[in-house]
Every structure is written in C-alpha cells, then in structure tokens.
Image (cartoon, rainbow, N blue to C red; front, side, top):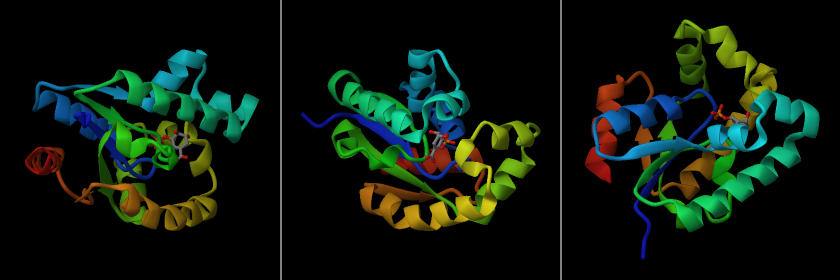
Length: 169
Ligand code: S3P
C-alpha cells in the first residue's frame, strides 16, 4: 500500500523544518527530521559528524535513515537534510514535495533570521558560498526530478506555503 508520509526536500536553509512545523500546527500529522534522527542516533551534531567522520559516513547514515523510514514510518511529515533527495528509495517513503527558491532567496531568508550566524555555521556545505552556489545549481534539476509536487516558497509567508501544500496533497 502507498505510504502517506509527506517528505519535504530542498536546499539548505530553504525552510524545510519551519514548514514541517507549520504543517504540524495545521493538521493532525506529526513531524520528524532526518538530521535530528541522525544526530540523536550518533549523539553528535551534523557539523561534528562531518568533521570527525567525513561526508561519505554521513551519507551512509542518511541511507540507513531512509531504509528505516520506508520500513517503519507512515502518516508523518518528514523534513530532510538538503542531500537526502539522493536516497534511492525516497519515492517509496511517501509523497515528495520540493520546496523551491532561488539561491539568493535562501541567503536572504537565512540572513533575515535572528540567529543567522548560527544557521550558517552549523552547515558544513554552506561555509564557502561559491561552492554552495555550484552545489545549488547542480542539485536543482534533480530536486525537480525526484519531486511529486513542486511548491515555490520564495518570499511567501509560512501560512500561505502551508495552505498550498495541504491543498495539493
Ligand atoms: C546537507 C544539508 C544539511 C545536512 C548536512 C548536509 C546537504 O541539512 O543534512 O549538512 O547536503 O545539503 P539542511 O538542509 O537542513 O541544512
């Protein structure tokens, strides 16, 4: 049977966690986040996991998380790390929603946050903006390919984004 999870994908800083929390408030669903699951499984922050074990190790933890989600979770909103869309089984986990924004829109969103410096610092792949731009450009076509639904989130209030998502699922 087709699973009823909703999976939010998109680039770092686009607002996946915030939108997941908005969806929780406006529905009877509960939310989990793949980075949070990995951090608690490892008892280490993502930044530390990258520093101590490297990116391939982290991707392996994402794979393990993806298999667990497929086998064990239903009726849940799942926010993901920006690279989680690469998991081969992602479409088996549930309905995939790509939260779309330009790179500049994402930077504006991060910079508008009161804790902008922390938001940047905790993300190893956002440390070098040129590299992050290249990563963004290379990922956009794949985000669109994997998605069942694309929602443009740039410069939109949270309530409007939540309303659009709930109207489309
Ligand atoms: C990553 C995004 C991060 C986190 C890790 C790698 C990526 O999550 O999973 O730093 O590859 O884009 P956010 O999208 O929540 O920042």
